[in-house]
Image (cartoon, rainbow, N blue to C red; front, side, top):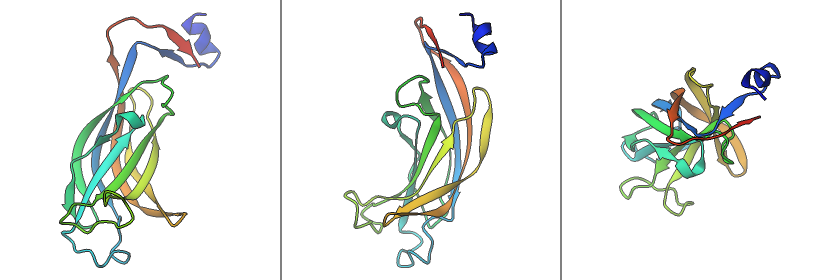
Length: 171
């Protein structure tokens, strides 16, 4: 079937042999780890990192920053995206993690002392389009989920050619 015919039927044509890169500009997070919940932890005792992935095997992280409750990263990360892989569901997973460094106050319930303070799943933008803004984080505690702050991101999906041929498939 021709590409034009497939498009007329409303199907997307996905080319194999091409890999994509999701460019993510990470700005900051806000309203995480509230003082009311963690008043015993001083302002200089918190280290935060942001973990991002489309495929769990290709997780990338920001630098770890020392702050109180509003970490600022201002970093650009490149996340590999292989459309058609079994792990691709069209979303970017975002996780704000408090690092359990020896000089900080560790979370006693985790093996490394690290604690996830907020998670989000954000839809990956279409090829060539930009998507950005404030995305809400959710925190799981004692089997319940609650809103826990925001993360500020800007994303763009771009094409990256891989050497070698490839076929096409239609979905």
